[in-house]
Length: 473
Ligand SMILES: Cc1cc2nc3c(=O)[nH]c(=O)nc-3n(C[C@H](O)[C@H](O)[C@H](O)COP(=O)(O)OP(=O)(O)OC[C@H]3O[C@@H](n4cnc5c(N)ncnc54)[C@H](O)[C@@H]3O)c2cc1C
Image 1 (cartoon, rainbow, N blue to C red):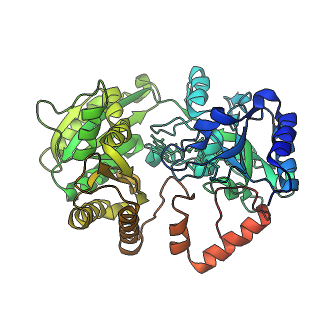
Image 2: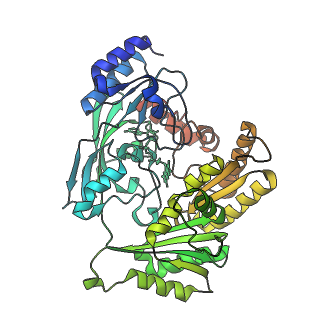
Image 3: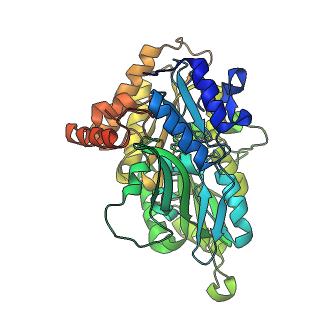
């Protein structure tokens, strides 16, 4: 509970971050509304431009019980980056924490401020022939990617953010304002518990991330892409296994796109065409990408030729049809699905994962459940098949037979999550973490022992519950 008035808080915080570092009123709008979920009212938005300012803000807020909500690019999808509706929480945005970006080419690593965005980071790395290969249809910050442990489409090749995190710097909530450095620019370091994991995928519960050291990778020198129609559900995993056997060192993406997902993008996103035209989009397709670094002089490798040959050999065994080539166009289709789905109506999104051996069975069962119990809803599903991830999006279309109502949405969420966790041994939050949007399912599905441990850790790192949005209690 805060011990100061709103006016006192605002003027004290303005004194710390300066005039440019504090927003109020209408200027806060884009910080108060999340990309999909989360809409609240902040006391003010702070945009510190140095670690010292972050430390001073945390100290001041901790001493007076003013709650903080850390925010990066606000592209998170569980409502954890926006304030509640009390107008008492302070959004701590890292948007001005982006001066530092030091690339160590020899070590193939980068030390970077938490507010630097993925796109900026890759622009800085490009002249060195390097990249940070997390790929998704949004432009998050480094801090947000660590707090959410972002996955994306190339996880099978490069892993998630956790796999590429060497070190981090954070401002602690307890003792308030203390600066903690965890890890160094080392790939091997087994000198005790890996404490930096307390900050990864925990939705900012551990403190305010201010800097990180990331492993970066050599940019591929060639890639090959195809959009493939499998002969059956069973063929999908056969094809994946054949790819891993024959071309596994090069496989960088194996994405599933349902017909509804492709059609939503084609119908609603400008300059996007159906790659199968004049045929209609099929019921299901796989976006396959191979990537390789190195010079053809030494490897003699032509990836497109290798992929073409592979697809030809698979024809009629696992593949019915394929569109080969123009990777940019095919990825544009994949990354346009969310926009296309939004244009259809109100998305009810499920970011889930199951063992990949069961992914096609899950999609089929979940679609059947919606058709039987919620026939007025429209499924637009797509996923990262190779890592078991599914974005099982259900759209309450504009002009649907039944008017939108929250109780039905809740019933659908309960049914789908129960199917994922209880029937398929999966996760109700594969990539996006835990926030107000799905906290109830954390409480339902985390075991009592796991919750006790999480509560203990929370008491250790944030005893006063200073960090707003997530309470792993
Ligand atoms: C169109 C679209 C597509 C997406 N696709 C994918 C996808 O394929 N895979 C995937 O994994 N995600 C995806 N996302 C989700 C999102 O981009 C990621 O979760 C991303 O990592 C969030 O980063 P951000 O900077 O926007 O963080 P925010 O949204 O600002 O914050 C996310 C969480 O991190 C915390 N946080 C942010 N910065 C800090 C900090 N410095 N210190 C402590 N805590 C902090 C926040 O409090 C919040 O809990 C997608 C989002 C959109 C809108």
